[in-house]
Image 1 (cartoon, rainbow, N blue to C red):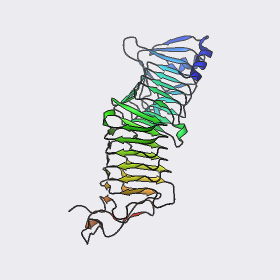
Image 2 (tube, rainbow, N blue to C red):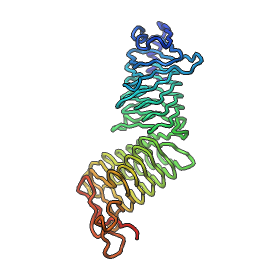
Image 3 (cartoon, one colour):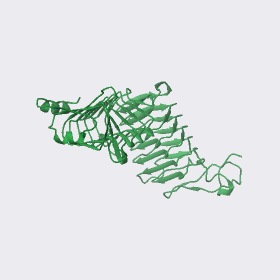
Length: 389
C-alpha cells in the first residue's frame, strides 16, 4: 500500500463500522448510508446494479459457500466506479459492463487498492484506470473482456500477480506524455500465462524467446533488443514510448490492436517481423524519427504500416523491402514524412505488384517502372517491388 493510501486509511480506521449485505439488498444504498472508513461486507450472490463509490470505504466480498459475490451491470455502464481516494475492493467479481470506456472496475481517483478480485465478461474493459494514480492491483483475475487491464494517463500505480487471459486485448498502458505512463509493473503479471514485461528507464536488455514474454512495453529506455517472440491479443504487442537505439527482430505479432507501436521513439530498427491480423501492423506516432523498417511481412491487417508523425524531412524514417499484402484498409498510409525506399529498392504492395494493378516491369529487374503513391500524404515509393514470377 502506498503511503498516501495508508495515511488516508488510518485517518478513518478508528471510526469504522461494518455493514453486512445479502443479495436482496442494494450495495449502492449501503454506500450512501455509510461513513468514510466503514467496511461493507457483501455476501455471495449476484447484485444487479451500477455502483458509484464517492467516499473512502472498504468493500469486501464474503464467500458464504457460493463463490465470490458478483456485481453485474447488465450490459449498461460500469459495474463499479471509484470516485473517492483510498477505496479498497477485495474478493469480488465485477461483470456485465457495457459501453465505450465502461468497465467492470473503473477507477477515477487515487490511492485505491484492488485485491483478490475478478473482472470478467465485460463488454468493454475489465479494470480501467483513467487519470488514476498511486493505486495498487494485486492478485486479480481479469478475463473474457474486450480489454483486460487499461491504464490511461495514470502513473505511479503498482501491479503484482494479476492474471489477464482470454481478453480480446489483454493489456494497455498509454499516455501521450511518458511521465504519465510510469508504473511499477513486474513479470509476476501474466498475459495468457506469459509474463508481462514493462520496462521503465532500462538499458542494455535482451528479451528473447527464453523470456516467453506475453507483452513488452519499453518506456524511456534505450538499447533494448526484442527478438524471437510470439505475442498476441494485446493493445500493442510491442510498445515503445520515448525509447531509442533499440531493435525489434524476428517476432510474430498477431491479433493485437497494434502489432508494433512507437510514440516519440527514434533511431530504432524493426526488422524481419511477421505482423498479421492486427488493426495496425506497424504504427508510428508523433515525433518518431530516424527509424529503419526493413524486411517485415505486414499482411492481413487493417493497415500494414501506418505513420502519424511530425517532421519535415522526407528521410526521417526509412522503410524498404517490406511485404505489405492484403491489408484491408491500406497497405501503407502516411501522415508525415518518410522515405519508402533506400534509393534502389522499395516495398512490395499487394495492390501494386502486378501489371493489372499498374506495376509494369519492362526491364525484368523486379522493380515496377513507376512509383507507388503512398496514401495519406505526398510521399511515394520510387522503387516498388513487383510480384515474383
